[in-house]
Image (cartoon, rainbow, N blue to C red; front, side, top):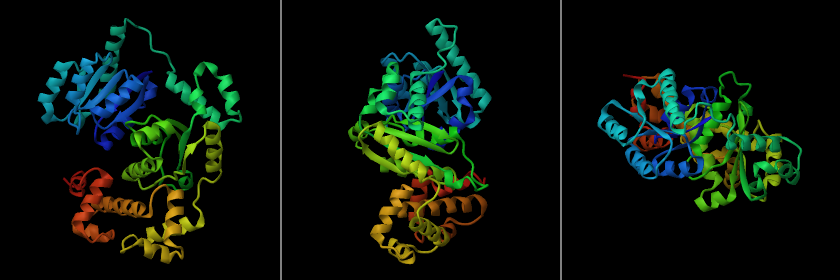
Length: 392
């Protein structure tokens, strides 16, 4: 397998790239994604990708500066650049700095991407004087496979580490945090569709940057994400923040958001397995208080709703409802409501020829300026830019 790192500040581009090819069938493994050059440098040190696919125009450190920095560091891999038609001067600069090739975003297709990657890996083989393929299973893949067997098996932590001494699993004895991501409750819905690869890619995109969790895909609709508690503390990141980001990622591309129960500050992987098992036993449904709250919100999102009015209509105290809702759904009531409204607005923009003011009012937001800001925050682009994709 050749490790691939994708660097682009647009989430939709990263998702499109990851879904355009069955990467692993062709001998490639996406080891990470980054939103700019600085994030990429951190990942490169940890993952040692063979090929980097990078955009040129990004906030912070752009693609050209990233390529210059990698050249100074004598990066041994190859770099492919993504560009738009108007970026040709930047593309030329990138090629002069040592980039292997470039791909036009607007014309990228599975066959052209695969041909470019194959040409690039031939260069890598020539550099290394190799004609034989790299090992079938990387250290990272082997470790993921072992961790998955631990969480799904009956072995104690001590015996599991002893049985797999060669894999260096001492980190399993240290403090960790987990998040269980599952779409189980949607399986009976004919409109629901997701795959194991898309699930993994969405999680990878949400946690990109400083964190390197283990993403253990359990099946086509659920995964367990295991974090180092030390890494979370050093990065000053809470799992709650990542759950919110992941919730936004899923609702940006589809109308179904998973259950995402999580737990931090676990003693070790033994305790993490017990928590995972309790999550698994309770998956697929919300408790009655949360279920009736979601039903009320989805029926009344087009009206002016406040936390007080929602809690009053479901006969619960605001403080209790906030606590149980966030615990079960993984996000606050306000975030859930805002994301629901923006999803409905996106559908209206796509399917109806209405003004933004009309659409804003139809989803329960009276302030059009606030609606536009919220839409861009959730979707990554403004509502007018989103509309241009469907109404040229």
